[in-house]
Amino acid sequence: MEVTPSILTADLCNLGEILENAVEAGINWIHMDVMDGNWVVNKTITFGPALIRSVREKLGENVFIDCHLMVTNAEETWNQYVEAGVDMVIAHIEAVDDFPGLIKKIHSTGTQVGCVLNPDTPASEVMPLLPELDLVLVMSVVPGKGGQSFMAQVEDKVREIRSAIDEQEKEGGKTPILMIDGGIKHHNASLVRDWGIDIAVVGSGLINDKGSISQNLDKINKALEG
Image 1 (spheres, rainbow, N blue to C red):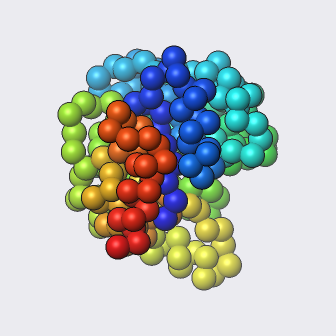
Image 2 (image 1 turned 180 degrees about the vertical axis):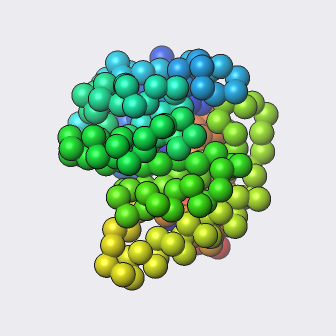
Image 3 (image 1 turned 135 degrees about the vertical axis):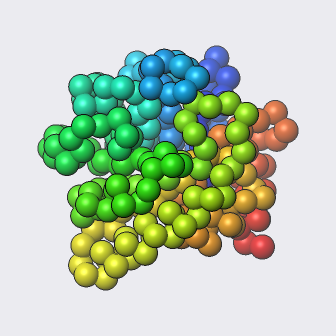
């Protein structure tokens, strides 16, 4: 299982240094959480295309960057993130009216597409989209709601999606990446890996004042090995 950092917990004044430390630690995928102040529960505003463009310029082309759009108007604004240099746009199924149409438009630019499901959204919602998706993201916390713990009850949904992806691959179809985001730390990393997760988004478990990114990543990797 691969780990990608969310920079939500990063000190943006030191973002360049934090990104360099992440790359030096062996991380080659950066997860950018975009909140517009409207769609998420606590009305948080994070950042937009301008910051993402700066991250791309800082890291160059060898690091994969996705943007997780927690916004009301992903269908109208996705192209701004493509122009900023992301490799993948991940949009919420709950916030998009025409997801097949959105996939087609984003794919036409050569950019990958992911679909994210909130904890209460059933796996059945994403199943019709699997043949065209590059990634499915399962949230294990409610986006933008503070003070939450990891929601282990998403296990059945993760396993159901994993099974569908594996079956699709067996039949010669695409193999979307399966990602999880929310409350992932060293103590539960092996748990979600065993569910079938390919990539875990880690925020405060990776970027904190208790250790460097390299030290925190080592802690997670040792837990995965154990």
